Image (cartoon, rainbow, N blue to C red; front, side, top):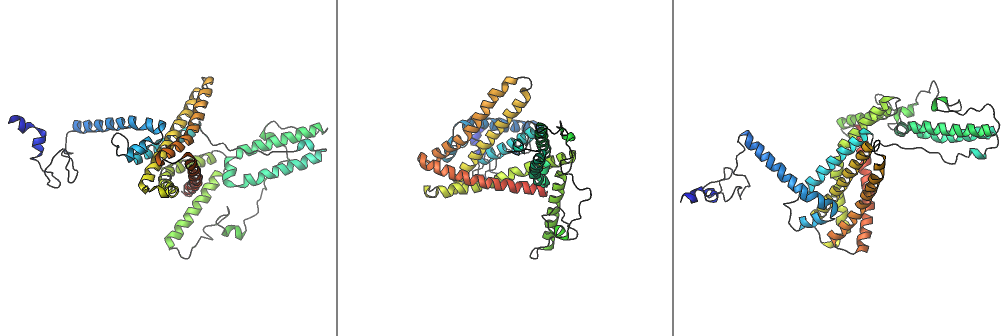
Length: 406
């Protein structure tokens, strides 16, 4: 009798759910799902629950990440089969890996291990074909004129300003060397950018004032918002004000990026930070579009849209995991290369294997999940990949525009 009274299962039959009043048959109410355990407990009890949650999540991480990276399609097929408890939920898995990979990527860019360094190159200068110093000067002016429009674009000019100066220096060096070969004793070969001769076009000391057309055009750098604000007749007043402020922010950011010295670098870092803050939500919005693409190409496979969405979640989770591993390898290479030069070769091979494995993984995953022949799978894989690349490019461009307008 005493044993029966102390049996937890027997005691639960005598207890009713405090939320809905249903007799309990376990530690959770089968009617409303509320737990029998109260949240009003000592601090040590809360710490025990938190530790149990962490250990439980860690166990699922161990069971989730290795098959996610090494066994294409396994997690998706397990989820379809109903075996889900030992794995992390698809959306949580994707979102956590997205945040973590973008965070590490931004750290790598800030530390200099990964940095966007666009290059500007002018090919076929043709100085060797010049017969006289006058021909050399004419070709040089022609080559320098090709660089001028690039430098006048605010965004591109700020990003490639150093490369533009180096390219001008190289052109002038080649031109002066050719003049020396032609017997011109007045030619001086510059050693650095500051030594460039007066052949380079100098900006006008007093630039002409902007025309009224330039001040009216919101896409022109001389646009005057106070004098010529944007007004869309069918928009309410507050939206027109918001539109004008947004365009004004774009102009201010572009002007900051075009400044000399540290202001341009600060503005670029701020823009990159804004872009990375927008990217997670951008990638979340890309998921239903990718699932819709899969639904279209596998329309006759009689699969629910949610099944395609699970495929999209696991595919993106793998890509973010690969991005995280690749970024960590770049950081490792940057940290060890100055002290261990030989590390470049194995890390380079690992990176090459990682970037090769990513498209192969996605192809195998698509083949295993949708169970079609290799020929049809390959065609659909290329079509979905091509469409998704365009969508991703537009999404990243939109995210960059939003960051520029912030």
